[in-house]
Image (cartoon, rainbow, N blue to C red; front, top):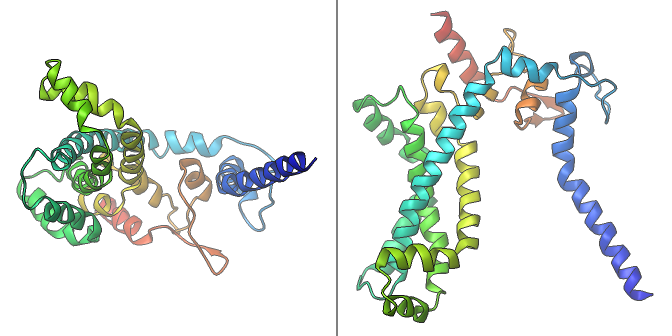
Length: 275
């Protein structure tokens, strides 16, 4: 009887936590499915009518598909480069066979790049990309994401390599495995949980990256999802929250009133278009 009561209590707590976790997503989905007249004034918990006009306007009028493609390219390319560089660097630092006296100092130095605020690298990176004439492409944003994600990858995955048994690698070497075969067929499969975790963290950062995007991107056809969502407003500087919710962005509120996500960015973009 006590076991059943404990199971029921755990089930109720789990359902409650699930509802709390999913409520913001369900609320945003409800905003995306409401018509415009329901978004004005007091908003009910559940939509009275369901419409897909926000999704159609988002992709047809606002050309949101281009932003999705740019974000996908930026995220996937930066993720592949970050994993390729970060995993190999972490493996080299983790193996005691490599006689590096400053290995500990190098590890903390790599982490320092991740700890510093991203805006501190904005000016040197902007000068670099401006002189190399790369500001008219997605390469500055991709490079910035790689620059931020590689230290995180190295710092996170190095502990997984250090916990591996050296005897397993020595056995593979005795069987004739090369260094690359050892790394690819023996070591990497053993640290797949760590690779999956750091891949998700790197993916989330690159997908939501806004600071470098708003600084480096100069043309509308290179807009990523955060930039495209931040300028979804009308000529009266009123944000279209149905479109924003359809795009999956978060709504910023203060003192019970809803404000534009980035009015300065949108104003500057509109002035550039008018010129």
